[in-house]
Image 1: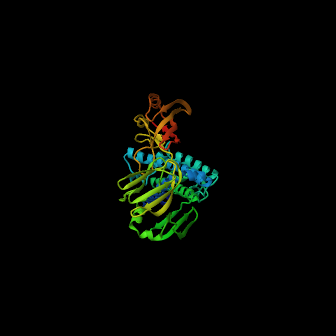
Image 2 (image 1 turned 90 degrees about the vertical axis):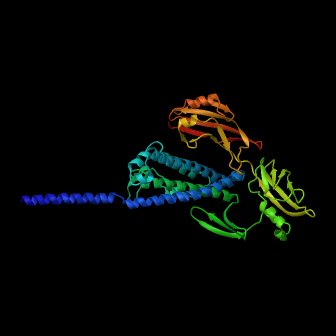
Image 3 (image 1 turned 90 degrees about the horizontal axis):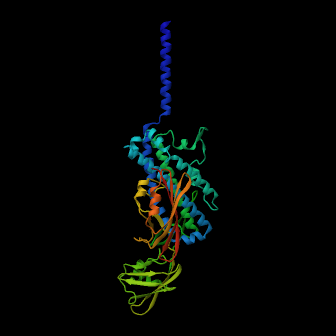
Length: 456
């Protein structure tokens, strides 16, 4: 009888241990499954790098055609959405940077923390973590849905943008928990990179849609084949259209394409990114002499500058110009005509000059080391700013209320500005607003404000 009791208890204990083992087997994720996520993360990062290259080109084309885009209501709507997506990209980048900095500060790494939960959950739950992403994405989704012209949102399709998410098993879960919390680093970090990739791709789609509205299309082009393969891409559909290449040069005689002199002009000609007020290099690496071997007429009139192997032109107003090239080696013979569009100088980007000041959240020590604002234009590889910063207003907010403000003249921080910066405290907001600039084309611009939140 006693032996029977012992056997029953022994059986119950063994059964309980087996049940516990099964539960842990179900709850635990295989390490090999988590380890494989490192390749998913690397894949996302590789695709991001390639998409960002396309985005850079897209930004340049938009900059060169900004007036035309703004004048078109549909393309302007797409452009505004793309700018909102650009802001969201800054937010997700700041969170990823925060995670990386925390790993660096604690002497750990993604690989070391990959199968662990404590570090990533603690990091994502602080004030610079997932809450920023959630707030930004919900605002972004609402903004896109309220736009007068929009595309089907890839973000809404691939990221569940609702406070309560219904799982595949029908259980209700909070957004932050569903995507990030209570999960190993390998899953949570992968979600960060996945969301970043979706934002980049969606921004690119909207920018290409804006450019498409004014005639630009993504194409494959070969000088050897007079056909264009236009890639018409939307979120839900991709089409390829084949058409004959339209030459922008009005030829006087098609046989002149066999003339080395004619071909040298064509290959040296640069009229894609022409801006008013600048010295635009129209012909470069060119060993024929203007006025002796050839002539160039520009209508309306523009100022021409010639030097060894280069001809530059300064246009004093925007709009369409007609260029006529003449061969004057034997007699004056019209080679070809070309119409070009002279663009308005795009709005500059103004930043505080210094290190670690490109994010929304910054350290007061980094800001105290700054002495000035700087303006930049990312066009034609210029290494100077063609204008000046006239003035700006610096405002300090404490506990949601404006505490101090001063209008600073020039780019250097004057004493009152330095005093306001020196009085900043944790969680204060510092805004550089009313950024007034003058450019060489005679225009005055107001740049986008710079906003900082002081974190320590």
